Amino acid sequence: MPAPIDTPRKATATKADKEVLFKGVTLALIGLVILLAPYVARSSSVRDLMTQAALVGWFALVLGIAFGVQYGMRRAKAGHRKP
Image 1 (cartoon, rainbow, N blue to C red):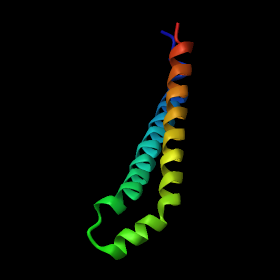
Image 2 (cartoon, rainbow, N blue to C red):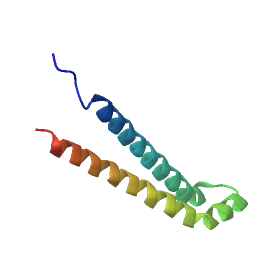
Image 3 (cartoon, rainbow, N blue to C red):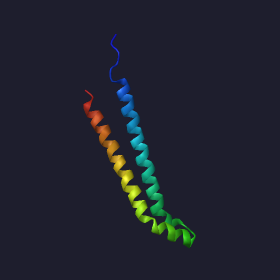
């Protein structure tokens, strides 16, 4: 009865993939909240503050999308390797 050889490595890769997906979704949501906040805020001071943070919002959104693309590429690569 042969023992599975790649089980710990596969579990580690799966955990890393899930972490990348979590980071991507979290960053994309943060970016969207920052970018949409000036349109939703009722206070003018909050609106001005969030307008000044637009660069941070775009950075978070782009970084979140990049993590999502990285997750997709990892999944495609892992699916391609399976016989």
